Amino acid sequence: MIPISIPVPIPISIRFNPGDAVQILDLGLSGHVRTPHYIRGKHGRVHELCGCFLNPEKLSVGDSSGPVVPLYRVSFSMADLWPADEHGPNDRLFIEIYDHWLAPQTGTAA
Amino acid sequence: MADSQEAPGAPATPSDHDHDHDALHASLVIEDDEGNREGRLWVEALQSMLVDRGILSAGEVTLEIQKIESPGLHLGAAIVARAWTDAAFKARLLANGKDGAAELDIKIGEAQLVVVENTEQVHNLIVCTLCSCYPRSILGQPPSWYIGKAYRARAVREPAVVLREFGLTLPAGTAIHVHDSNADMRFLVLPVRPEGSEALDEAALAQLVTRDSMIGVAMAALPPNRAAS
Image 1 (spheres, chains in turn red, brown):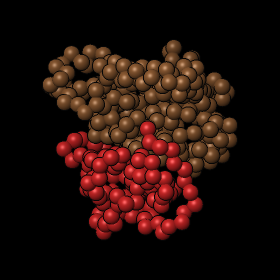
Image 2 (cartoon, rainbow over the protein chains, first blue to last red; image 1 turned 90 degrees about the vertical axis):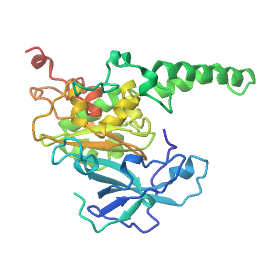
Image 3 (cartoon, helix red, strand yellow; image 1 turned 60 degrees about the vertical axis):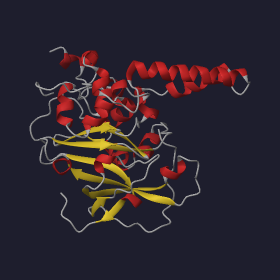
């Protein structure tokens, strides 16, 4: 379970739009990090903006001072994630990623 | 599951732990009964200290447990049944799950809610690889396999295999969308309305909406007249 966080009006610039190609960063952070290892470094597409939320990495140690960060749902082709396994051509994984774990890409992720 | 290889932790099959447990799992977290026993000892010791010192009363603990355990599947099922019978509601629910639930006076307390719709083309499956994120406000507490590491690891990697182990073989060509619920969203699958349910009212439809169908490891149940045939 993660601390409860509620979305707030968006006070900051939103870097990504649905459809944008992104890469998940590997920030090497420890603690209450919500970006699992299997997705780090992978290329995907922004599906939608979920809203802006307090950063759980700070919330988990009692720091609710903000600022809030945009949270996106990002999707990936399963074939890109696990090339050695069998997948349907349209099988996809969707995962929530906070803005600071994302880098813009000019690549051609499915 | 591959015949040649023992895949640990197929869902809900108690015989999974016939293998050498310690050798296979050099685990960071102790799971299953072993972990529960240790956790229980810690909780009991902590609770008795807090009660002894007057910081908590046993009654407060009981009340809190009741509060956590009181939401149930019927809430999620009511949302699904309404979506099956009211297209405008379904559209609002898919646009914003929390607002949609609120229309039925159902409060999603723990997070936001994303509702994902199963169709002939797409089947959705929910998992939380990092822990046990689950829409507890409307489904109650998650089943033990949902929290287990085998499901969490495999659902994002070989979902079709996992679904087959649950007894669900999807028609060829159905795309699988796996949702790793790891942050501020919770996810509810809106199952396909079963064939033969056209005549049923909302209350009867809700009876067909199983927990597993709202996680995505099963279809909704068939109506009684169909299930018997």
